[in-house]
Figure 1: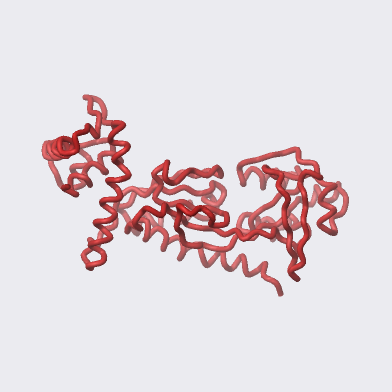
Figure 2: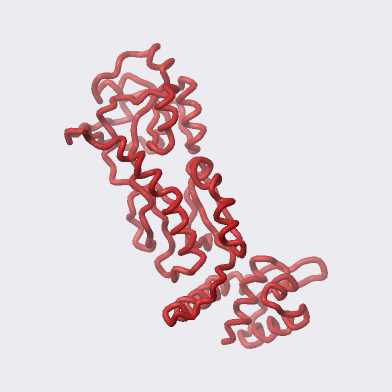
Length: 307
């Protein structure tokens, strides 16, 4: 199969413009159209639906697209093994990340990445609701959880220590908190699944807390909104240290049971489907995030390490 025609199809799928895709590969519009027609004839399927006003993917084209990307990734990896990779890293990188983390750590450094790699286009999906990487055709995602999905591979960005926080106003109006059992008398935010939570202190002593024994009046699926509600005095919430370290330092939030953290083996992972070859565009983005963010997050985690 002519991989240059496959590359042209992938660009058409991204740009939804045959002429623009052809120009990106140095082809005249007529040549690009002819090569696509030849590829479709060889495959026995119409990959694109064309009209005088727009181009769109056909059902067959949508089915073929992930395989086309995989073919190109395999070719790039094979050339890389022979030291023949082209110096230009290009293409569209589809990336998913939690919105709160992205606002605080990823969005501010995007101009630096885009200036370094001017031929890469970032297609970002930022939400605290997790997307399915394979069904959504994502190249990469940031997940703050334990790595348990056997269909994914990844690189660890940092640990993800989670702590309990409340506002000074809330604490002034409610009963003192001296031990984990006292949580049962308080209002909680965002215990969405109401599963029993494990807590561990700096000495390694463990405790358990069942959220069903407390009052939970606010469920929230957005981390930034949860933090704002906590600062406003709505109750106690679980937060990652990377999310609340500034508010804790300023006194806008207070750490509850400061010797304890959630007893979870969670981390911030950059993950990608196991079936995918690690393409150049994904590799450079992973390296960039590790260089720009990894050290900052590791320093935050060390401030919470046992004395």
